[in-house]
Image (cartoon, rainbow, N blue to C red):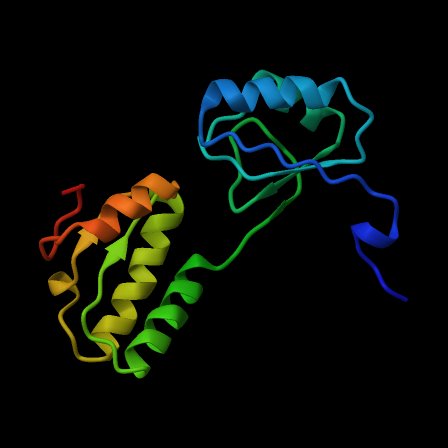
Length: 158
């Protein structure tokens, strides 16, 4: 038996908020007016909007990768530490040595940076020699980070 939204008459709606609080509130308010089976919510702000809290009270919200204050709802999470460690190990085993890190919001980025650094240390390299650029997971942020010549250990944009 195949499972998935395509086989079950499910409408999937994607709301891109670009980590903007007012957009998160706008979409949550609109979604509250619809007959929903549920909302899978990945925040960019780390703050629940009033409309999202209303959806949560109705039992319609599942959070992704974090728990938000004031929301007692189910959540799924990834192991950012182990994932970053595995990616870094793979890159190092492929022979790459000119590395750089583009970070994002503090909560997941701290764990990812720690995993990345663990693999660099295990490869007997200096983790402080790897350039770091602060980002926000946007396309523009990635473009700026990839376009610069970062200074080792730097944590801000160029």
